[in-house]
Length: 164
Image (tube, rainbow, N blue to C red; front, side, top):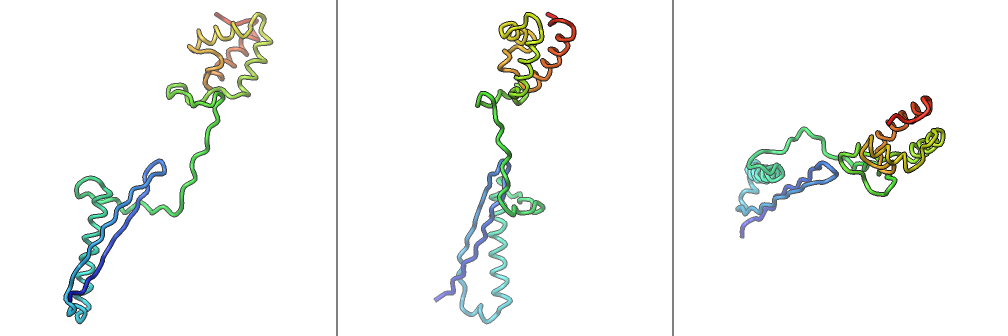
């Protein structure tokens, strides 16, 4: 009856955005019992089987015929902390081209206060001005746009009105 030896290699690697990919390979070898009388021959055969498994796993993880995964990257020690969630005023993330974030409530409050100090500037006129300057209503302004509007309103307050 032959001697059965099982050899296996398993590896999991981290991917961007907290993903991972894993692969494993197992080989079952049959050897004559006499190999146990020659420990160096036994070790050579087992090491060879491990080498084949290791290369198969690396090739699988690399995903491109025969290239191995870089060993220079340190293994992940623990699960990374996810980035903090961003709060949006309208509970929906802004469009990609919308300068990333909507105006903050603090910016909107300051805009409202500035508008009160400018004669003839009500919500309707402010929205019309924002539509003309930024292509959107005051409630849709990005934080960057709101910052620009605040500067414009400060100038308007000092100069006695909005330049249209």
